[in-house]
Length: 217
Image (cartoon, rainbow, N blue to C red; front, side):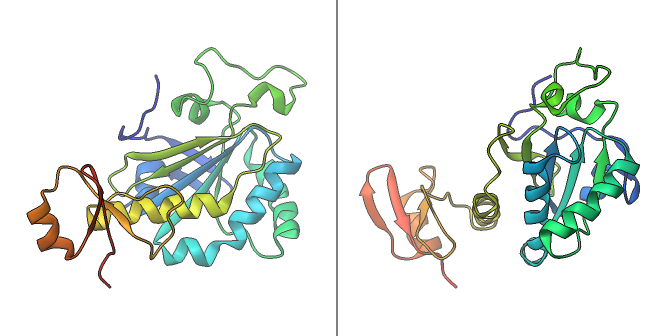
């Protein structure tokens, strides 16, 4: 079943290198990012998890939990963490879900229901397990991105998107192309000019349907 924006994400119980989790309990009242990987000990994925580890302070600043999922078992994850931390130059304190049975990959629509892992498999057998899911405190999917195996994920963009989602949710606005924190935001078309003036103060009308304003504070 396809997973779309604003759908409630699947709940599941799974083993991780930190122990057993129930996913909705893990999310709690936090923003959460789930990063998926087709196999442990793969070069691009190792650099990506290293990047996630180095951004710990940024995730914490945004009240966001991060968790990985990879199509291998817990013991492999524990061994892989050593390599990840070597690449990162810091500890990797986030859990990694063991999805060697493909339950999570299928639940999040990264693999078809009939998928299986053949003997002697390679990362190509689960190549589509290369997604980023940003999930709100309401347990609903807010954003997803899927990357091929030969292009590393851009974590500056993941942070920018997270900032945009959190700002939109908190302030009742939208963010324009290439937006960064502190820049002008878009006033939704459903808000009248009078209400926009009361809520945001001054704003600029670029087009009848495009009004820009700077957030207070």
